[in-house]
Length: 107
Image (cartoon, rainbow, N blue to C red; front, top):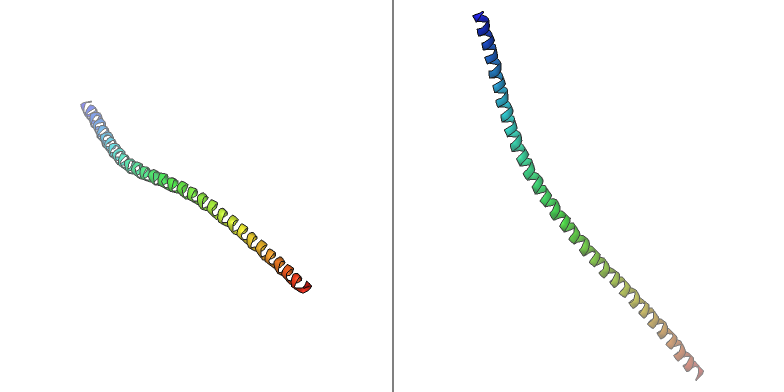
């Protein structure tokens, strides 16, 4: 009977020892997981800052693009009016030449 009790106590002791080792392994794994999570969190924060910087840069580029588009449209509009004025001047000069020619021929 004492042997059985002793064996039971030894078995229980071995089970407790194994469980303590498992708990130690779990604690070690949790510590490593916590370290990895901290590194991941830091990288995510860095990427978040990069994304915010890129978003700001993108907004600046869009604003600049709109400004350049407006300037381009103004230049195109000015070019159109200048060509129109040149064509009108050319037509008026041609008409003036015809009138001068007609006056000279009639004399």
